Image 1 (cartoon, protein in one colour):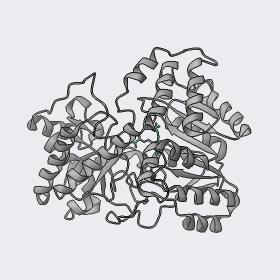
Image 2 (image 1 turned 90 degrees about the horizontal axis):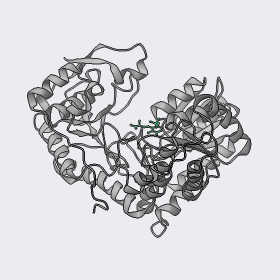
Image 3 (image 1 turned 60 degrees about the horizontal axis):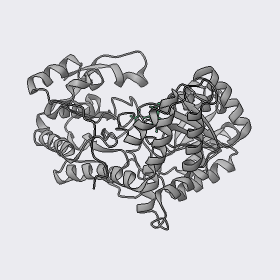
Image 4 (image 1 turned 135 degrees about the vertical axis):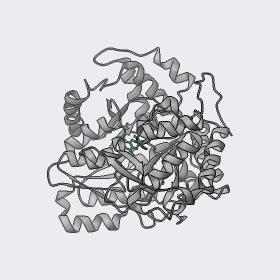
Length: 446
Ligand code: F0G
C-alpha cells in the first residue's frame, strides 16, 4: 500500500506514435539521445530521479552555506552515525566522487580489487588508479531463472582463487555492492557480508561496502534471511554495515536526494588522507562539492530510507512491476531485485543474434510502443563481456503509481505480441572509448 501522497506534480505526456517513430530515428536508436519531454514513463535510472518528502524540502531552508564547519554538515554526520554507524564522513558531489576519493587512497598500479560485481563507475575508478577490477559473483547469478534468495552475494571461493593466483599482497581492498546493481539488483545476505569481511581480513585488505541501496538490501534480509524477520530494517541496515571499514555512498539512491554522496570511514589515518583528496577533487571536507541545503536534504533522506513504510513500499512496488510483467508472460530476470525489474531480451527476442543487440532493440520497441524509457545492460553496454541480454526498468523512488506501472507492463506485452517482427540493430557511429559507447553511439535497424 502506498505510504505517501503527491503534493506537487509534473505534467507528462505520451507523444503520438508518429512523433515517437521520428524521435527514435533522430536519436539514432539510442534512448540517451532522447529529450526527457518526449518520454512518457522514464525508467532509465533510479539515480537522482526520485521525489523528495515535505520534510526534505523543509530542510533545504535550513542549509548553512558556510565554507567550513557548517551546521548542515554536523547534521549529516549525525545522520550517518545514527543510520549507518560510521563516525567519520566526507561529503562528495555524488557516488563516483566518493569512489574517486576513496579508491585514490587505496588502489595503486598493479593492484587487484575483487567485488561481487563492479558497477561501471566503480570499475572505471579502480582501473583509473591502475588497478584490475575483478567480479566475483555468486553461483547462479548469471541464471535468470534460478530462484535463490541472495543472488547478489560475493563468492569468497572465486575471490580466494584470485588471491592465490595474484598474491594476497596485491589486494588492497575488497568491495561489496549492496544491492548488486550489475547483477539485476539482487540482494546480499548478512551472512555473506560477514564472510566477505572475514576474507578481507584474511588478505589484510580494507573492506568497502558500496552502500547506494543499503536500505533495500536490509529489507530483503528481513524478508528472506533466517533469524532477521523480527529485526527492524534500521537495525539490519546497521548490522550489515558494521562489518565494513569504509563506505562509498551515492545519495542519489537511498539518501533520497537528487544530488550528493559521501565516503564514510572508521580509520583515522585513512580519513585524514581521504580528506586531502577530497580537498583536491571535491571541496573542503565539510561540504565536499555539495551546497549546505543539499546536505540538509540528504541528512533527512538517509533517516527516511530505513523507515518501515518507505522501504517496504519501495521494494514492494518494484516487485509489483515484476508481477504485472509476469502475468502478461513477459520474460524477466527472477527473483525481482531491489530497484528495477529486468526484462530478459535474450529470451523475448531469441531470433535476434547477440551481435545485433536484442536488448537495445527491446529498449527501442518499449519507447516506440508506449513512450517508456529503459536501459540496455547487455552486449551493447558491455562489449565483449559474456552477459545476459537484459533491459533494466529502474523505478524512481516515490514517483510513479500503479497506473504508470500497468502502462509499462501493457507496453511490454504489446511488444511481446509482435516479437517475431522485431529486427536487430547495428552501430553506425561510436565514440573511441568502448566502455562508454552505449551513452552516445548511434544505431540503425538491420
Ligand atoms: N555504485 C553503484 C552501485 C551505482 O549504482 C552507482 C550509480 C554508483 C556507484 C555511482 O553513483 O551516479 O551518484 O555517481 N548508478 C546509477 C544507475 C547511475 O543508473 O544505476 P553516482
